[in-house]
Length: 431
Image (cartoon, rainbow, N blue to C red):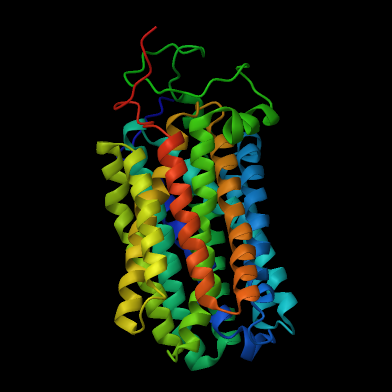
């Protein structure tokens, strides 16, 4: 059977995967507004215990980072669909654990399972979509993927805030979570196809056996072996290739922003006197701009390249985070949360696209998993760092300045170490 690459010839499967990542976003989004804002009143976290409050995101980041790495290798052995199904099976207890949590420790344990779920499911939607699309559609593909996911994150944060105000946080999260995860499991079983055959049919450049001519000439990172071991790929992506190392460190640090939004934005805004639905809308403006703008920023990078949008995104995020604590007001906070979302939209799909540009199809799943390992480890390191800064200074605002400075420095490193990876704009030299 002849397999075609591209969004159009694989439209039905592409849409199925977009629906899957929307449900992935809804699953993580249900914990983003209600849980941190009501951690003290409903889950027993002592007031101003910033390190304890951040513990659930630390746990999430560490587990998700590891599972991203594992998922990449697993998917090359078991297949993308099986790993996706496994991720949804792991998620089934999460709403029950949060809904009936007798202590904060149960919330942390549920977040560990959430990290496993997210590492397996979101990784697989991206890897499967990259399997079936063309290289010149990579920015658009990842932009659409991240759009669907973060649209789900934003919508879930807003909807669960209203459900919590009406039915209470536990019941609202319980029924919302069970409905989303149950639907996702059914669709993953009966709607999603295995895409490994498309990955196997992808053309390869010189240096790997390939019967077809490839019009684009990516500057693939070079490995010593055609069938590299996991350790060799990990070292290449993390350290040996400076371009990939620059992308990994930027991915890690940009998660400091999302950890801040997850852990301290709800507490900061709730302490400023906003109602829970108002908190949901301010934080939702970050997610909605982030999600919707990726419809444009992914395609933009297919035209102007990945490097400039990535660097711009890091700097805009730094500005947006710092501005949040300069002045008060719902409109002010909503504006700068949206600006921060715009920065994330510029960098988020395009860091992943840059990794995919220079990773050979034979080990691209592993490379993306390793990049996502470092990126989502940023949740854990960022949450721990901002929790410690807020604890020792006694000021939530200090955590905002900490994250803004880290983004500024990381963006500078990316500008220095990185380069354009788009194969049309910076092709490999002809042999």
